[in-house]
Length: 132
Image (cartoon, rainbow, N blue to C red):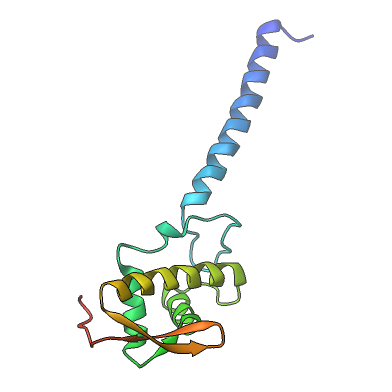
């Protein structure tokens, strides 16, 4: 037969294990997975890019000439070493690219030069140095 204190300790231990599992799951939402690992279903992409890194990658891609949003997202995915077959990740990156390009357009750095299907084709308004 169990001692009453032992039962209390067992319940507290079970609760602590549950709490730890929840904390670990929360941490996983904000950490980028290691190279080659699958992205979790819910992931904060804000932590995937350093400040202005997405814009820099897009400018690098556009140095080769006009490209559409899909091409820019593919370039970013390849440059970051992410899984190009993950369609959810690709769509999320595309949305971030669109946002970055629109902000650059407002600053006068990018221009829309047309559409390729449903994707906007972007071009640099003027050539910028890679450090900008």
